[in-house]
Amino acid sequence: MRTDLSRVRWDAGALNNGLIFGATCYGVARLPPACSYAIGHVGTWLAYRLIRRGTDAIIGNLRVVCPEADERQLRHLALSTYRSYARDTIDFIRTLDMDHAAIARMVVREQGSRLDDLLARGKGVLLVGGHFGNWEFGGIALRVITGHRITVVGKPEPSPTVGDLRRRMRDAFGIETVEVGQMLDTALRLRGLLAAGGVVAMLADRYLARDAIDVTFFGRQTRFLRSPAMVAQLSDAPLLPAFVLRQRDGRYLARFGDPILPGSAEPGESSVRSMTQQFATQLEMQIREHPEFWYQFYPYWGADAPTPPLRGERFQV
Image (cartoon, rainbow, N blue to C red; front, side, top):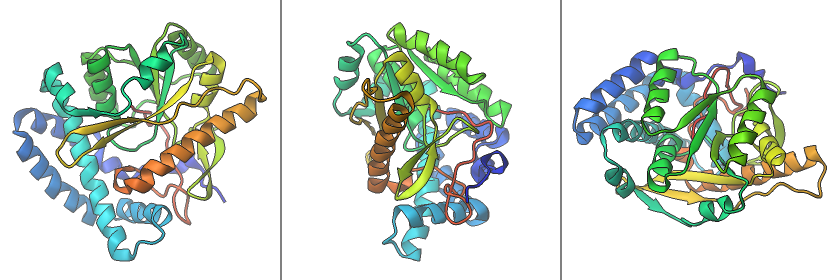
């Protein structure tokens, strides 16, 4: 039985409300990085202990992702997830006070020509990711390093304050934000951006109301967002999975997956399902390698394990 996602709340909202996010921005802008990380280290231990619903949800999700792990290992991974999320958030905020050369030095790139090769087709590229790794920093780094026009697609944040802060951060780097309204209107706008050779970025591992399609994910029937593959098919643009992972030295590995091309020989819905499944399979492989970087703070598959909340949440790169 599926959970009605219109009634599910993101239990980590306490970490993403206007007061906490605003205070984090204020502190990170004024403190040395080491101090910000130290505060984040302590603060996330408190969150791990006090936000019981969020912690229980992370552990439930990890039981599916890491079935071989015992309870102690799962709890360690849950704490690591909180701390990874804090470090990623701090690094995203820090970019506002960094010059472009400093941002570029924070990135280790794999397969750097893959995006350019796809853009050479003249159809644009739809970058697709999950709530995995530092998608926010990844969008800024991509804009700074490549100079490509980037548009981030998403729903408004539950907190208008958080939404405004995130939007202003993107604006500072010339990254456009498209708020999802009527799906047809949004799809047509994205089609125009892709036709102009742009890069559009969306997250697909949480669905929105009827904008959903079933895939197999960690052996379970799971609903992903349908629109990335639908827009790609409508535009004849490739989907390119993208993942940005923090390394031990504090730099980020920017990794592209295997491109997913619209299937001209398949019926429309079959092609959308096939493309979304290909992305889900690639995302699953990344999460198995680094489960602490998957930021789902609610029961992702429902009451028996986890499913996604999403009402009013922005899809972020």
